Image (cartoon, rainbow, N blue to C red):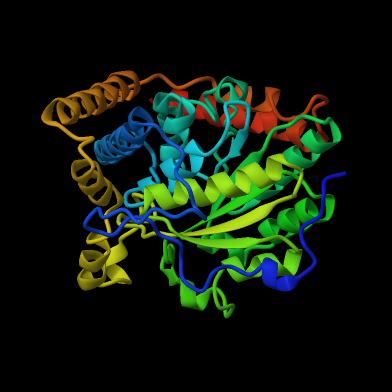
Length: 369
């Protein structure tokens, strides 16, 4: 069994202010408490992953507007939180995402084309989770927290020295599943990092209407795990804080909760109109903390930036976006009847009743066309 967290409640409380290492102008404040142990090329890779993520994100929105995707959930503005946190994981660690973790997937090596097939409805899930140790996108709010906690408990029982990261948003903290997952993980001392991307909006509900706690990170003390607050638009701080939590979990010190303060600069999904519930002034203010712009300024200040590097990154982003467009445009759909073949080993009674119903509906539709 893993070592349980410290009993002193003060050791579990988050810091008064979110941890940050980069100012908006790119000034870096090095900290012995939050070291960034990345070489120059790794530091440039953080930028590369954020730019690729944003370009692919934009391409997905374009494809949805052109009728090629049924829906898309943008991560615009959250690239720093996702790329920084995912970079802190080891190659054998696992991620259990929600439906918005495009950036984490890019870091883990997940081909974004598979994500787009899901949003197109080509197939329910289009990748092998074991190829990138990256679970399927969870559309129900918060269910992936249970999956991540359970997987981490299983790893603990198997003496498998991995760490599990599960991502969810501030809105998911208003659901029951995340709390059950965090409680189980804490009781068993499981190596699971609960990463909340607090983007301030759960569709149209602001964070102040979701909790009366001082912060979301304060909820960690109720489970007996440490809570951290970090500037999620600061990719270096996000990496450093997550790395500390990951290292502790790998040493057997149990789970941790991280609240990354970021901002959802786009709509909740492509079916949402955020202008109905938030002001343009709020959006303009949030844009001044853009994680990519801030990090570019850091690279420039530290002589890790040049025109050749910028061109290379932009060309890679365009290549990735073009590949997605080519793969997704008018991609054929699978056989809807296959949905009955991949849920239960032994088919249930209600499935057997639904199978002929769907077959009849498909036949009727074919007759009409």
